Amino acid sequence: MEQQLPLFARELAPADQQTVREALTLLEGQLREPGASFTSSHAVRDWLRLQLASLEREEFTALFLDNQHRLIAHETLFTGTINHTQVHPREVVKAGLKHNCAAVIVAHSHPSGEAEPSKADHQVTTRIQQALELVDIRLLDHLVVGGMEIVSFSERGWL
Image (tube, rainbow, N blue to C red; front, side, top):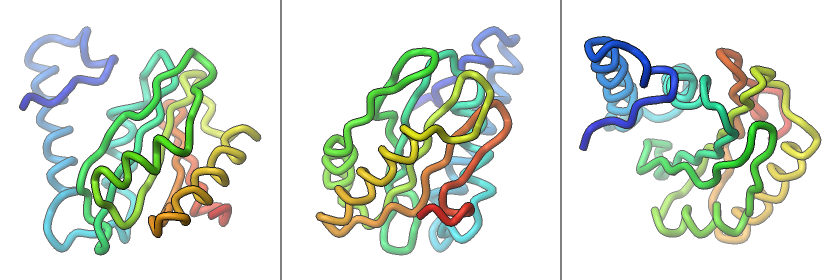
């Protein structure tokens, strides 16, 4: 299956589009590599930047992980407007159960380029964390991507 191109790459020359596809494939492969768990977030951040940094609308994505924090699957769960995405915690739980994951990292884009999380981002993160706890799935992080900047809830001590 061919790697989906981020919006910014769709206007590039075909050779450059292929380079972006190859980079995404390499990063995703690195995330899935046996024994390479998410102890460092660099690969995740790079992959998320390529996927979310240049979107024109907010998108909410989840990375579903096994017990060793290796990638099982990733899914865009919600797409919104230029400044809002309606996120339903039950759909995050439903997707987590579908993938039989042990842990989840969620991320969403801020098309404004401002990565600082809003009050609503904090509230929905708390609700997602509570909902996932009911089915023994750990929420490891919520990353907000604004342009090339990424804010991690976990690194700020909010999770």
